[in-house]
Image (cartoon, rainbow, N blue to C red; front, side):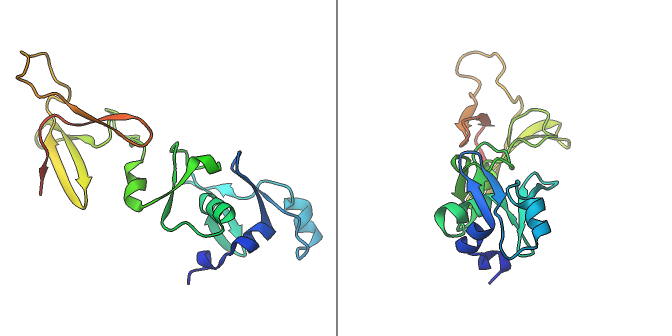
Length: 184
């Protein structure tokens, strides 16, 4: 059993107070701690934000993501898989913003990468062909589509396929394909 799984909801509640509306964890006054610890930490916000954007809190010499601690605090058990931040903000640990998700669901909800100049998930410039290419993964298979032109150009009705759109869980529309995907 990992150290993360050893943390119980009882121990978490002894160490921290969680405010579900704000997503803030604060340190409780500890009877087992030195007076200096309580003077420095009790009543103050717990943890710090790492370079990856997630808030982590150290309890009993083990670092934990605050989002996972929120699940343990509210449900009394560790989340089964991963925790997804509905709004995509990694440090927003409000209870209403957290969902239990599989790895696949969590990856589908990722933001558009900062190097993506189009701002469309799954579409990138393919240098070898000099065209844009859309990629989508479904059940372990990767599909690709030539997306040139990425948006339909004016043409006689019925001669140019229209792009199909799909809304992700955050309600953003993304162009998936103009031509049928080839899986393989």
